Length: 122
Image (cartoon, rainbow, N blue to C red; front, side, top):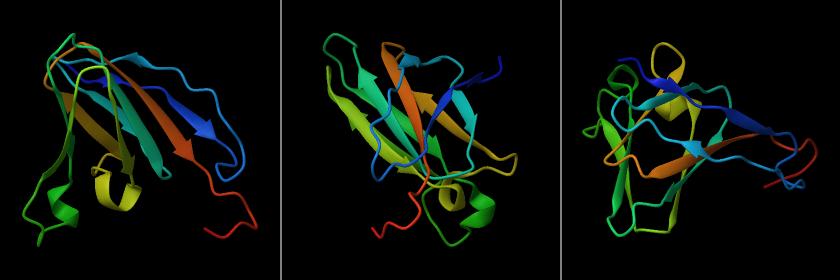
């Protein structure tokens, strides 16, 4: 089956605004995907009831030929939230999407697209 598309919430001025974000269920058997245009914060809540959750983000081999790893992985303990900053230059596949896979389905995900606040230095 095809990957599921995840909703991305835009944070218009991430240097100064607090933004509501909704967590949605992950698609463990098929994986998830989304179009990435800007830096995007991925938050994954593990609600497995005891087991650790492994989240894997694919890296495009064509952009990183000297790079040994083809994936980035984060292991999240039960009831904890894992976070990863996803960047277009590092994580975008040739079709403009990011691919995310999970070791279990008892998890939820939120994606926050970060837009730089004009005039602020970080």
